Amino acid sequence: MNKEAIYSGSLIIILFLLEYIYIRLARKHNIFDTENERSSHSGNTIIGGGIIFLLAFLIYSIFFNFPYPNFLIGAFILALVSFIDDLSYVKYSYRLLSHLVALTLILPYLELSSHGYFFILAIVILGVGVLNSFNFVDGINGMLGATSLIILLSLLYINLSLNFIDTNFIIAIIIAVAVFLFFNFRTNPVCFAGDVGSIVIGYFIFIIIVNLCFFTSDYYYLIMISIPGAEAGLTLLFRILNNQNILMPHRTFLFHFLVHEAKLSHLAVSAIYALIQLLLCILVLATFKWDPIVKLIIFTSVILIVTGVYLFFRNKYFNVRITLFKSQN
Image: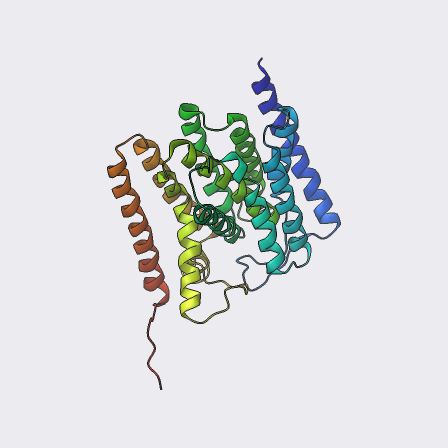
């Protein structure tokens, strides 16, 4: 039995054990996600179960002699600030600072010598958006885990062909997400990922995708995060256009409306989002070696279709429309 097989098998057992221990400790110390303005659940559910994403990466790093120390430091910074935010409250400015520091730690691993400062700034801004978009989808049973698992499995498949990053890194996070889903993808979930989980998994997915984009000099792969990106970006746009505070907790994401207004179950909504995510990833896997012009057309079409579908269902169910110009009374 080779080293990788021993590592994978051991990791499954260790992460199940660590998640079980965390759940016991969380119950003992009342670490619950209580209902608030952004919640889609009733009652108290353990929060912070996504801490195993960080623990999985730590175990991977120890087992393989710390191949990505910057990623580990960045993940620890994000996890610390996010877990404190789960337990009490951290000002947005401090959370944003942690995001910027963690994302900056990725930059030395990228080939940036031929790019200017504005390009580097664009990467960091994109990273902040990705982290927050994954953060938004936690709270709907199974959604964060299911979409993340599909993206990671797709990236693993591509990596087996291109070898742009250590495969064992991706496998570690896949195992952690699968373990988390065991406790989360239920009608009555044992735990939610919390900010500590959703921010860290967003960080790892962004690391993998941005490394893939630089390795191939192709940004086509960003299609794989267009679902959480569209959900977050378009909802943010709606709130800005309606003069709503974008920093306040809310329940105005499309998936919130599907649960509360269309009366779909959490697992049904998660399954719908996971299916769409799967279709997009299959599209990428089937076309990532195609001609760049064709991929550009596909990329543009996907963005337009995703945006159109979002607007259609938002208008269909909830009669919410953008008004760019309001009449003065």
